[in-house]
Structures are given as C-alpha cells and as structure tokens.
Length: 415
Ligand SMILES: Cc1ncc(C[n+]2csc(CCOP(=O)(O)OP(=O)(O)O)c2C)c(N)n1
Ligand SMILES: [Mg+2]
View 1 (cartoon, rainbow, N blue to C red):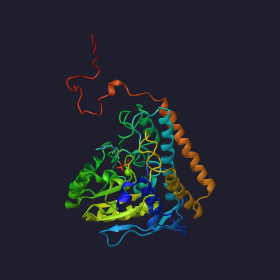
View 2 (cartoon, rainbow, N blue to C red):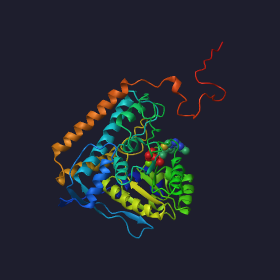
View 3 (cartoon, protein in one colour):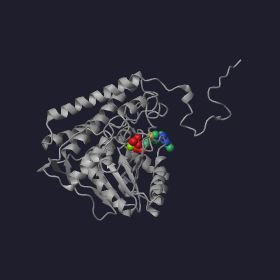
C-alpha cells in the first residue's frame, strides 16, 4: 500500500470506490425444478425450525450464480452455483426486511429520545446474519460484538423483545437492563461492548463443544476494526492448535469508529489473517453467497477439520452508532453507490426476476413486516420501565448481597 493511499482519506475513498468488490449477482439461471429432492426436504425441515417461520410454502427451486469466493489455504471452495426453494427465499426476504425495517424504526425512536445510550444499527449488513443463520443449526452457538440487533432477531428474539429492550422496558429481552449491546438468547452469547472481547469467549465456547463431544460449532463474529486487536491472534492461535470448531467471521463493513480500513489495517485481506487457519472471502451483500459458503464451511468443520476464518465484504449505511452522522469520514456518494446494490433489494429483484413470487406477493410481506414493527413499537412504549428492585437481579446468582458494602435500596440523606 503506498504512502498516498494510507494517509490521504480523499485518495482512499476514490481508491475504494474504484476497487469495491460488491458484485451484483447476474440474472439467475432459470433452471426451475419441481420435485421433492432430499435438498428440498432438508430445506423444509430447517425452515420449520426457523424461530420466525412465517408459513411460506413452495418446493419450487431456482439456481443462481454467486460471485466467486477468495480462498486462503483451501484447495477448493464452495460452489458458485446455488439452489434455493421459493419457501426458503421468501423467508430470507422476510427476515432481512424485518431487520432493516426494525433498525430504521429504531433510528427514529432514538431521535425521538425513546431509545437512549448506545445504539449501533445493522442496516446494510443484513445478508450477514440471515445468510449465516440459514446454514447453521439452532443448537450451534453464536457470539458477536455490539452491532447485535440483527443477530438477536435471527437467534430467536422477537421484534417486541428487541425494541422493548432498546427502549429500556421491563418487557425487553434482557428485562430492560441490557440495552442495545446486551441481548441474549438460547445459544446466543450476545452482544459485547468491548471491542474484540467476544473473540476469546467464542473460542472458549467452541472448546466447550469439543470437550463435551457435541456436534456443534461456534460462530464468533468481529469487525474489521476488532481484527487488529491482540486477543484475536491469541484466540486464533489456540483455536488452531486445539483444532476448535470455531468459525471466526470478520464482518468487514469498511470502517471502524470513524476510521476506514485503509487507515487502520496494514493487511486488508482479513480472510488471510488467521495464519494457519484457512480463510475465505465472501460477498457479504449477497445472502445466497453467504448461505452457500456457510453451508460448505459448517460441513467442513463438523468433519473435525478445525477453525475457519470467513471475511464478509459488507457495508454499514448508518454511522458507527446513532451519535455519529457517518458522513464526516466518507462521502454521501460512496453510501449511495452501495445503496444502489443493497442486499435486501437484491433479494427482492432475484425473487421477482426468477418468478418465484410476484411483486404483489412481496408487497404483502412488506405490509406484514411493517405491521409487526408498528405493533412492537406500540407494545414497547406502553411497557413499564424495570422496577428498581430488579437492578441487581440476573446479575448476581445469590440474594441478598451487598455491592461494595452497600445494599440495594439503601437511601442516604446528606446533612
Ligand atoms: C477495547 C475497546 N477499545 C475501543 C472501543 C471503542 N470502540 C467501539 S467500536 C470501535 C470500532 C470497532 O470497529 P469494527 O470492529 O470494525 O466494528 P463495526 O463498528 O464496524 O461493526 C471502537 C474503537 C471499545 N468499545 N473497546
Ligand atoms: Mg467495521
């Protein structure tokens, strides 16, 4: 990397715009099949285990071609020819649209001061959590950083549980005590506010799966900024040494906190940074590419082959958090360029162009999603704040207790 590209943000932006590898998927191969192959039966089983299954039907499948994957220490990679059924693709659209609509509504609630404190939105990155989730099992584990709302949803928390939590209400999934960065569900370990802190924990969870002889993997997510943290390399070293079933996923959204990857990272090929760990770079805006790559990797890992590093090439539309306008270190044109591709729109167009569903069928989904979000907002705002007696519950395992010599509920009068 030249001195110019490292230190001149304007040159960086230009360079990035020229080299961004967001590839719009070519028009689908219209190789329609009507059958009950084992693939469809398998997809059917997994869709019915889906925590937010909306009852979509249709065994009819279509093939698409995904952009190619970049490989590191892999001799071969996943197929670029992917097959998906109507029911599965509609559910994927529903999930991605729900997350997008929820996040955008949360931005409004934040500006209305109904959500306070930290709030990191996932808008633009939906293909990541939805694609990965569609190819792992419900009993696999997931741990991520603070940009956790999308994952909270795919792991099974309801929109009501998420929005109520963000509004600090007792009906929230963490009883209003966690907020944006601290949401948990079965086999979902959060929501972690310290950059990189979740990575060794993820390796630890993978170790537990291996130690207990469970056929489970742990998806451990982190950002491009966190990729430069020392604990990542320590965790990866141990994961590689002990052959842990840990899928490290770097969600490369091109920015840390106001800093572009070019300014922060000497090596921009994040998928190659696991040293002895094989890696793969995937177009993270293409949900089918993420789904296919994850399916292939999960199979590889379940066969006892140890950890893998997956880099998702993605983008966040909003600022780092709600207090960052997100336009001081990147241009509006850059954001617009990605919005023109847009991962949700890409799914919508693929469904329509391949005749898996009509525009009016998708409009019905849009309507349903809007209603779910609206009801969740009304539910949240009508919910009470947590009772003060609850301040320490679910924090310590035994009660009563004192914290630094004080007991909850004590009152002091300063005379
Ligand atoms: C140890 C630590 N250092 C600094 C911060 C402040 N901080 C919060 S997010 C962030 C940038 C992380 O960027 P990235 O990993 O790319 O994740 P993204 O926000 O893009 O999802 C920083 C520096 C922190 N929370 N923890
Ligand atoms: Mg980032």
